[in-house]
Image (cartoon, rainbow, N blue to C red; front, side, top):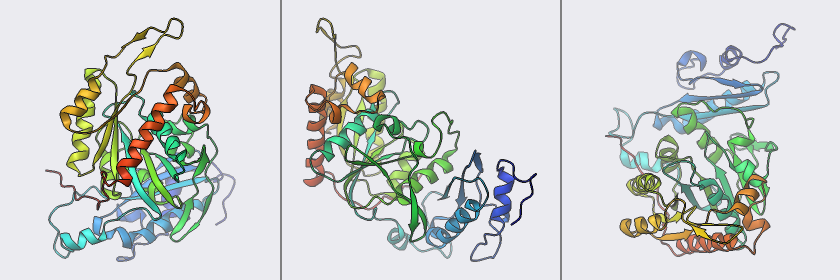
Length: 381
């Protein structure tokens, strides 16, 4: 297609829509643009993001359409990255006329990621409790045990993993069986993928639920993880779309819940435990972060946010308690610098606690406490 100088302006959503007119639906022959299936198209410089609405039973048939849409938009001048996902807002329930029954639907659900033995979520009921720092150092601790480890940053609205690992370059893309796929970056023996590699650090991700779900699904499925013993997923805080997407699309082997000792955080942690239990994901354990603070000058130990609350909550809920992690200046400084404490100060007390946590998590996974399972059928009432 020949573009004149006036057209050689920054890409706009209208340009994307025109490109998608060439993509046809397999059943009707209707153009994707005219089908009404497109979510809001977001353009950030050379990056384009949108999703295609589908019925759950269309997932396999619509994958070639998704790949064709991605290729069509990549052909526009100035495009550096395209994020296209398939999304369904219809909750699972009784099948419509002509749809397969529950047993056939269950057979269509994904059963895991190729080559990945266990997927675990590191989650919290609220933000600011040190969940990402825990996920990062837990992943490195597992890698130091000789395991093959990956870390997926699924916190779409606040990706912290690029900063924690000191990574900022874009992932390389290669041809895959159904289109272009990304190769994860690597640091400290861990394969890493994050939405933060695809957007600028100061870009606000103002997305509705379907776009969040599509982005997480793409980061899971369109990445060549290779052979992994454990994929650690740093979840966004809360119990919303991202958590349900993970539970529906991936057979999670278990979840680690991070909280601080204060009552407000424990209330939200309790909700997090309840959510994972409701969707049949085993809770591997609870971590109490910022449990104590030791003054670097005099050595006096203070309990700034209370103490022991997460341990008592774990006992009350009947789930394992994994660790009491101190509020540490060294951990904070190394995290901000992209030099995680487990990797760069392995002799510290904090690194030892993270390694003990990693050993407990692996013991639960390899010992069968966190069981492999099929992705659950979630019904919203």
